[in-house]
Length: 154
Image 1: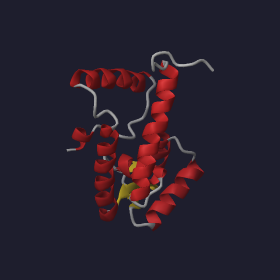
Image 2: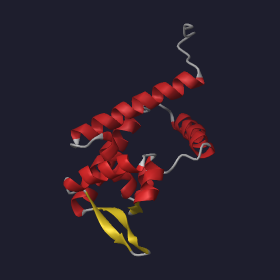
Image 3: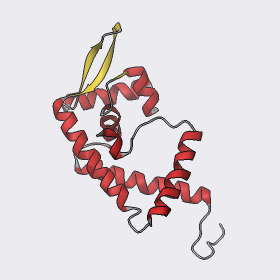
């Protein structure tokens, strides 16, 4: 491997390393709330609305068996519930319970706070540039909305 020059790293290394950093922050936050990282993701996705199982699998990028296990475990903990789909009597929608919604709000707020701390030393213009560039990466690659900007939930 080549050495870094003047502390600069390339785009690929920066993206991969920042992914590890954000995942570590997210996992630590989830652990402190008694959740797995996947349960934290599930709760955050369900904050916006209930989802059918196939939609949820697509958003979270999980195979049917993995998603079923995740929903089962989270349901046993009283955080989500399966409800009949009003459009399709054979299907169910997964929704937050009252307890799940409260935990999701707390977990979400704390996780946002921790992720924001990663860029605490940035100037407003730098934050705008970073958001624009990363937003473009996400949009260009059609990344599902698994986590939204804190202000958009209010």
